[in-house]
Image (cartoon, rainbow, N blue to C red; front, side):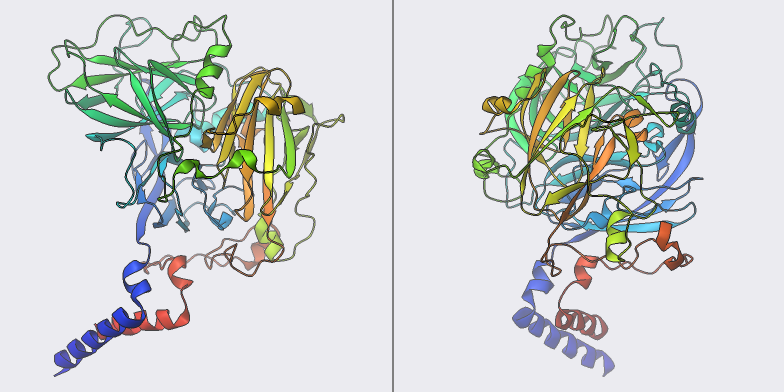
Length: 594
């Protein structure tokens, strides 16, 4: 009888659900969940045992595989001996900077604690990666891929590939990350890296002098006559890398969430923090395997020969191993425009649909009036208070003891200043917690001006900006006449060449506090960052989410933090908890009845 009663109630509720609550019952955005256990393991990527940071025992870590509009839960367990935060560069976290995973917005996860990130990948597609954002930990690993697939109703602008392959490239030091940051804190340069890793492995032994015996290398297995999507990420410390595959062209298709005009390249410069998708067609005769190479750029290559990553592309019908010299790097020692021209050739595919059915090019950014202009200049290291520091507009950033948005919500004063200068000022450099005060729904022009001697890349969390121009020399207002106002690529990580500038246009529609930083880890660690604060003065809960229930407290709010109790309770998505009360009641009634 009880069984019959339950069956009837379940059927009745099912009918009510269809009639009254169809939006929640059948159209809610799906939730995907992950557990990340961040720990140390011992590995020998360059032949010397060292401590690296693994995710679930893997180096690199596992892929987060999402689809547009999915809700994503990532429960991060900190098994390191120091604080931890995970950040999601390029994931825009709409209305939700609480999940950004940097010190300006989050209290760190203490050792032996866990914390669940809970966010939606709203209106996004593309290739990204995650990594630990504090304590120089990315230099030890902890990174992995974050893929957002198109919804089934929106086609990708190329034939479905026969395979999807992740490739992580990055410079690497044998010294562990704590030794590296100790050197930086002592005012020392890191020096030349010990090598380049591809998917966490050292180089194939293409040269018996440069590559010692016993190093494990990466092999990418393919079949002839197929097309593969390669998602390539530069996860290194500070070195731009040239990526190429012997005897093959690579067809650029997407970068950091936006489809590009499809162009073939024999090689491609990928700067620190950047991600690209290439289509590789396996159309060679497979007389041997082929080299996959990632070599250092903008350095003295005769001295930096060992800073070269080499993997193997292995056809299933290959007749032998790869042999002979590596494919040549770009021969542009005396042509500094070659790499910049390649960067400018990356254009947005305006006819392709991205996360929504409307074409990517339907946003006419070139006709919008600019409301704010910031010229952000980086210089070589300076001495402030006896320490070597990196600056932006003369300010070396100090991370606040209390995250800024948390301080706002609890009405703490003096935690940070909204006085970041919109131009470089003629004054002594200083350390400060100085933040850009952005205007909600404004249209901001940011010019990154690199007066340093090194190649740099800069990242803007929470946003993707149109890269409308770059050139050598000084930016002036006349430079706007050379902007690309039609099909500039939109991206979150922007390269800036030495003694050059790059201009980016951004629509400030994402409320929160968002990190702007150098992706070069040494410069970031030494203070080359700030934040962009965007607040809706008429906030009513529609443009910014409330602080999460599981928020961590630190700094001046540390007294609010309760000791963490570990349990196996099911985590409920914040998206679910934001639903109207009637729908929540209906859900729980349905759960009980069925």
